[in-house]
Every structure is written in structure tokens, then in C-alpha cells.
Image 1: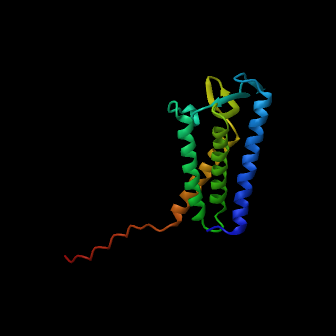
Image 2 (image 1 turned 45 degrees about the vertical axis):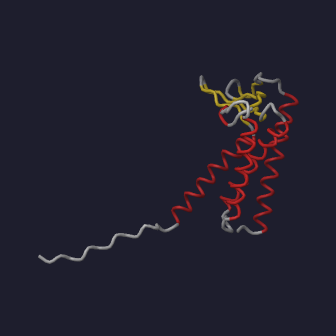
Image 3 (image 1 turned 135 degrees about the vertical axis):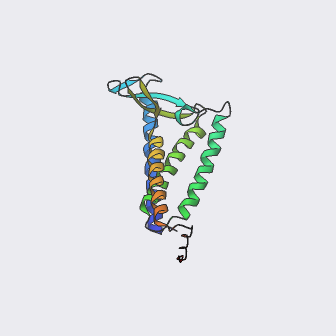
Length: 175
């Protein structure tokens, strides 16, 4: 169980990411034309306001996508909350990973609740003919947090002794 100080850090990270996500989405909706790229670094990086009614990479599951992804987001937040409760004190990598994922999931959930148009995306990268799906701050938090959580879990797995007993040595044979 994490300490009170670690809980405060967790809440601080979650709050900061959500505020940054909501502020940048509001700014994007206020100043960017819809679906028209505004070059920042030529065609490599543009600001482009789009609404994603589906999930990552444009995943869409029909007319109920909004409700399905809202439910999945809530379920993910419950699972992440239980992971936070089992986080060892001092495991800062897992703490910040869980905070980032929770904040990103909450930021995109807020979009789904407030509008049927979908999640506000506005960061757009293209390299040659390769176009990355447009994304937002919440998406970055989820991605970075998931990577950090994977590292944390991998490191934990390496520290735990194997539960498979070593084979016993065969008794010496006499010739």
C-alpha cells in the first residue's frame, strides 16, 4: 500500500495531466479549424482538430461505441485503482505509470461524457506517406504510462524467484 505522501503525488500527477489535457483540448476547439491542418513543422507536425468517436487508431464498434468505450474506461480505472492499492511503497515507477494511465483514461472519458462527437484529438504527425493517427495529451499519458507500467512489471518479474523448483540432481551411478 502506498504512503499518504505517495497518494498525494499520485493525485497531483493525475490532476496536472487532466488539467493540461482539458486545457489543450479547449484551446484546440477554440482556435483550430476542424479537419484542416495548421502546419507547425511543415507537413511533419500539424495541429488538426478532429473528433474520434472510437478508440485508439480509429477503432470503432458501431453506433454504441461511445457507451462501450465509456464502460471500458470506467472498468480500466477500477482495475488501475486496485493496482494502485497493491503498489509497494517506494515503487515510484509504478506509481507514476498508474497515475499517467488513469489521467489519460479520465481525460478521454470526460470528452466522451461531455460530447457525442467523441474525443478531441489535435496533434498530427506525418512522415512521407506514413500518417500517425491524430492524438492528444491524454493519449500521450496513456501511452507513456503503459510503457512505464510494462517496465515496472517486467522489473518486478525479474526480482521474484521462480516458483518452479530446480530439478534434483541424479544420484551418482556406479559402474
